[in-house]
Amino acid sequence: MTEHAFADEERRAVYRVIHERRDMRRFSTGTSVPDAVLARLLAAAHAAPSVGLMQPWRFIRITDTGLRHKIHALVDEERQHTAAALGTRASEFLALKVEGILECAELLVVALGEGRDSHVFGRRTMPHMDLASVSCAIQNLWLAARAEGLGMGWVSIFDPQRLAELLEMPDGAEPVAVLCLGPVPDFPDRPALEIDEWTFGRPLAEFVSENRWS
Image (tube, rainbow, N blue to C red):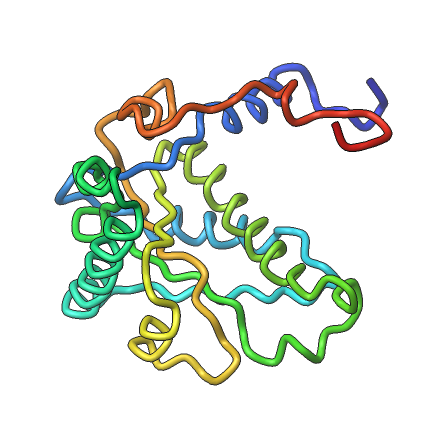
């Protein structure tokens, strides 16, 4: 512990929000997110670390109902392709609820901005650090949403080129996530994919080694 540590109660809140965050698919319909809350969430996302302070993230708030349905159609089409690629688990996958695009209070698309190649600092040998930076922004938003009592789901089942065209993104920009955000009926105590018995998380010990890969 150092003089810079947060107070006990504040630290507990940080760890609590990390462990209680869930990838949500089911939302309370007919609800909304107050503008002030949404502004706080986006500010939290924008406060994320980024390599070379490049801030590669772009956020598009989807308020047009017709556009929301078109995004849902893109996701549903890719859902069918994903099922086909899963072979024997196709029907099991199709039984899962994998998004809440039409039910959530707010729909956001997060993208990598154009002109990223001009940012060399920290990316010369690892150009994918722009994606790592955007992922940090999404995680910030996710944790802030949980602290506000809101659920969020990260949807990655879509064709990025077609979504980029739908949203009229410039050349070089690339969508990374469709985020469903809003009030939810409850927060499960385990990840949804464990509850649905699709897969199960593994213990931390399997992912930590010392001095060399093991």
